[in-house]
Length: 61
Image 1 (cartoon, one colour):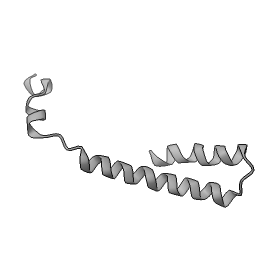
Image 2: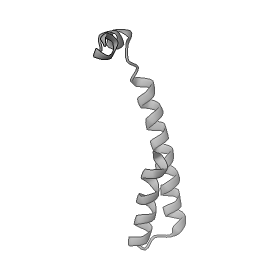
Image 3: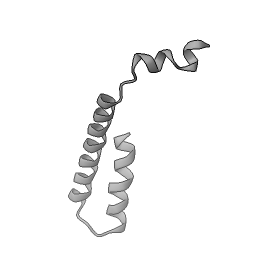
């Protein structure tokens, strides 16, 4: 996901605004790293409990 979000942002900005390519490439790398870290954080924080799984409609069907 990080690559799919970072590539258009970094290279789109590079095409529209006169910035050096190394800056756009850094934006791509940092944006990818940021998305990966946010995904890891979200996965660590969100852990459905056993009650949620047992109480769902899928468990009764």
